[in-house]
Image (cartoon, rainbow, N blue to C red; front, side, top):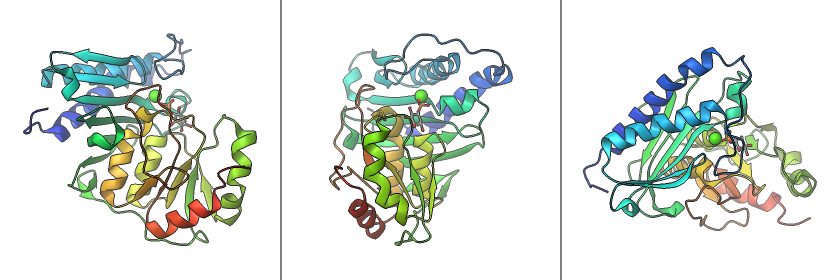
Length: 276
Ligand code: IPD
Ligand code: CA
């Protein structure tokens, strides 16, 4: 990956192209949306997912001589020679269900890494496509929302906290009891349905924490949010409190707890049961 590559400019152009290319689909979203097979991440692919991925790849091919695409839809694909020097991790549309139901909360998520591991992510963009709000980060450079520096919440108690919690459609009988103490102690629980964006809400201090211990979320959904939160000054670990270690692969699933600050993080770790 060239040292002088202006990643943020490229990622913003990818987002702009996604917005432009999905516009006709948004105008006809009331029509039945066919399923175009199963994406590499294991979920049904809708036309809007495919169009958004193509829009990102189109810009990447214009701007980069070589890269490895790691996408929730078409999986892992190499473009050009030396493709292993640059990984672009893409969830073209995070929150597809919201989008097709006209719920105004969906995003595009793109992370860039020098190696196929989460810890090697070095540039990131998550964009709320409905409200035109764009979060970005470069390793060591802080995190930004529409160009303004962001920082997470300093709230350390759950008494007034707003905590995002994903219990969506997966092993609820096992997961829900492990979260019951956290739910009981937290003043406000939320889930909006696009986890990339919900991690950015923690980065910006709009919410105080976000918890997804289902083991269902793909790393492609959260790789960009991961860097944005860390660069903002937030904390993200496994439910056991360890560093997140994951391969950048659409089949890789991940569990995590993300918080605005260390004290709140420790409080949440203490309430999330590892077993029931
Ligand atoms: C989904 C969203 C949702 C989460 C699902 C994800 P997708 O992403 O992030 O909030 O509950 O597990 O699959 O499928 O729309 O990219
Ligand atoms: Ca998706």
